[in-house]
Amino acid sequence: MSQSTAKETLNPFEIARKQVKTACDRLNADPAVYEILKNPQRALEVSFPVKLDNGTVKTFTGYRSQHNNAVGPYKGGVRFHPNVNFDEVKALSIWMTIKCCVAGIPYGGGKGGVTLDPRDYSEAELERISRAYSEAISPLIGEKIDIPAPDVNTNGKIMSWMVDAYENIVKKSAPGVFTGKPVEFGGSLARTEATGYGVNFAAVQALEKLGKDVKGATYAIQGFGNVGYHTGYYAHKAGAKVVAVSTVDVAIYNENGLDMEALFKEYQTNGFITNKAGYGKEISNAELLALDVDVLAPCALENQLTSENAGKVRAKIVVEGANGPTTPEADAILRQNGVLVVPDILANCGGVVVSYFEWVQNLQGYYWEFDEVQEKETVVLRRAFRDIWNLAQEYDVDLRTASYMMSIRRVEKAMKLRGWY
Image (tube, rainbow, N blue to C red; front, side, top):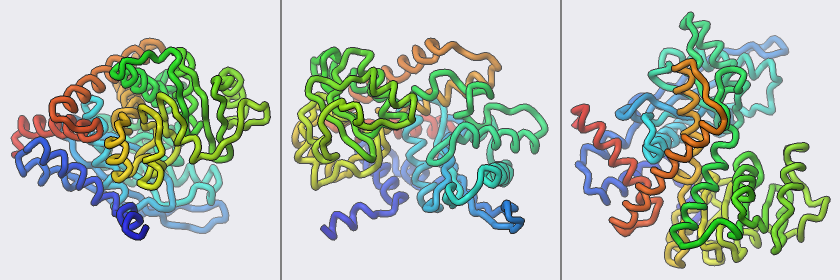
């Protein structure tokens, strides 16, 4: 037990470096590639004072890490969380470089955050904190430099405040400096749906590779927030049979397929689901993960599939809607057991793809229709899946390793062309 715990509490920055190193080695890349990629190019720590509602002043610590801009400007979220620290932000910026290059969009990785628990502050205080953070990192960001976005505990409203604070400093309109904004303020249609839409689309392509049709395929979805909801919505729309869904409070199973229309309605009304209407029998989270289904979509938290339970997974395909739901130990077990894992950096990159589209629309000052955005997203995601699938076959590696290899190959070429090594 202690050994696996020790493994799983590894510093995220060390984990990210290790993953990059493994991919560089598999590609037989020039040693300079890892040497450049192992650290962010720039990382900023800021401390800024904010006046609270009771009149006292409190200083907050914020970060912005810019990992690599060989293929384009830095891109990545800003989180508000008590555990935000420099190493976490640096690791996440490395993963964003990888994710953007997996999708094949012209961005490098960035990440930021402020160390705080948003529940401790009023809305007015959060607005002042958001504006102060935006001002503090303003020398490092810009529409063609670094484009932050929402992440844990941040949202479109917070992005709007940050854009306004930034524009007040640069004295010009710059809507593309942050993405994930509300549609009324330069946001993109189909952004809310983008991640879940992409998760289901990844599942559809994986099913095809196994010679199965999505019509009638069985799905179990862990987590029914924005990503899980839209994964289920598009799976149902494509004719799949969703037999199980779960939230923090309840997991529901119905072997004949859940009444998804009723579940969607309940989610849209309340923002969460219950089993009051008796959709199916209540099962445990552990039972959901072990169901005999075609597709298991973990869309909740990290480290859900571990060395303890990976051997019990009977799904043919695991499509990672959440970030990091499978530990490295679990990955090895699933591969051994013939389970096809579509990794998070490929399965859930639909969000960053549509963030990219939002930025493109901001720069053009011209906005696309909902269907146009989804069509364009489909084109990007289909190409990404195909490229990575082919690379995995070529090197006989799993899709996660192939995703890292594809990504590093793309960054490597751009760095070489720039003359960085």
